Each structure stands twice: as structure tokens, then as C-alpha cells.
Length: 224
Image (cartoon, rainbow, N blue to C red; front, side, top):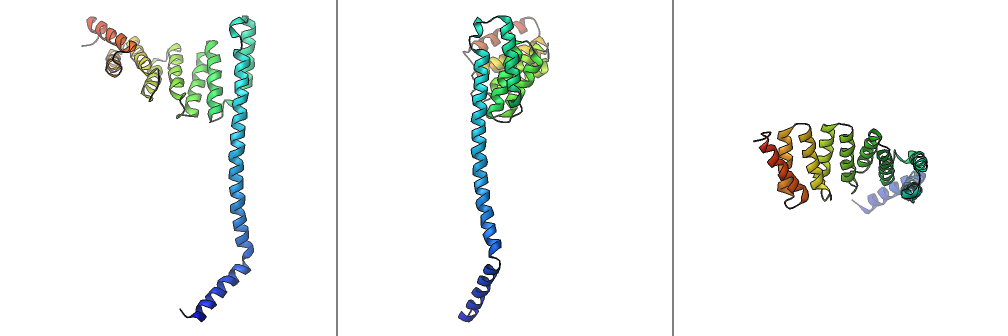
């Protein structure tokens, strides 16, 4: 391309930019504003999360402080106040939602409202499946399901908890799943889960108990 043609092309580009400079300037401005908005949103989100967690900490403290020294009426009053205060946080899909639902579930469990406790433990688990509290919530959901005689659900929840990496109650969760199967007279599945507990957690208390249950089931002719 000749110098003259290059100059002409450059002139056309410059002319286009000058004529449409508002478009380009606005475009850059939009990008800058968007970046500022994103940063602001993250900052606000982080700030709100901290406020929510602080609020939940305060609710938990008011509910639990010196709980062993209060009368039954005072305990019931604290439970009601805590439940009311936690309500705005139960639908949140973040760590605040996890904390709020777990505390609400604990209160419901103490009141023997196992249906509500189960619902809140599952909400807490699903609010953050990567949180370290996930397996604990699923384990507690299993306990609640047992209390409600929902044995199939209890087994499923216990197995999820047991299969979660690094869960400190994994051997107990697996044993519980086997035990509930046995109670439901599903002996083949019970035997399979007892054996898995023995194989996976040799030397643990729950593995030893599982081995005892296998011996007993064989002696009674429930399994081969």
C-alpha cells in the first residue's frame, strides 16, 4: 500500500473516531462504570455477609448464654425470640444462611419439632454443599428422619454424610445407615453396610460394633 493510500486510510479512521467519539467515550465510560459497580457489589455483599454473621452470633449468644441456669419458661421464651430473629436469614444461600438454618434446626430439635429441624438441616446443607458443615447437617438430617420413622430417608442422609471426605463422624454415619436398614428388616443391605464399615474403619469402635452385628445376624439366620 502506498504512503498516500495509508494516509487516506488513517485519515478516514481518525475522521470516524472524531465523528463517533461520543460512542467510544461512552463505551469506555460504561466499562469503567461496570467495573466500579462490580467492585461495589462485592464490597457491599461482603459487608452485608459480615453484618448478617454478626447478627446471627448475637442471636445465638442471647439464646445460649447460661442456658443451663434458666427455668423452662425462660428457655421457651428464648427459643421463640431466637426463631423470630433468625427468620430473615433462613432463605440466604451463603454462610449466613447455613449458620441461621443450623441454629434454627438445633432449636427445633430441642423442642422435638423434628419435621422443622429436618427441613432446616437440609436447607443448611444445600445452602453450601462445599462447606465443612455439609456432612454434619446431613448426619443430623438422618437423626431427624429416624425420629420421624422415615427410615429410607435416614439411610440416604447417613450415607451421604459417610461418603463426604474428611467427615469426622463418617464411621458412625455408616454404622447408623446399616443399623437403620437392620431395624427396617432390610438385612442384606444392613450386612453390606456393616461390612463396609468393618472394611473401611478397621479398629474403630463402630467397625467393631458392625462386626458384632454381622455375627449376630448370621447366628440368627438373617444373612448367609
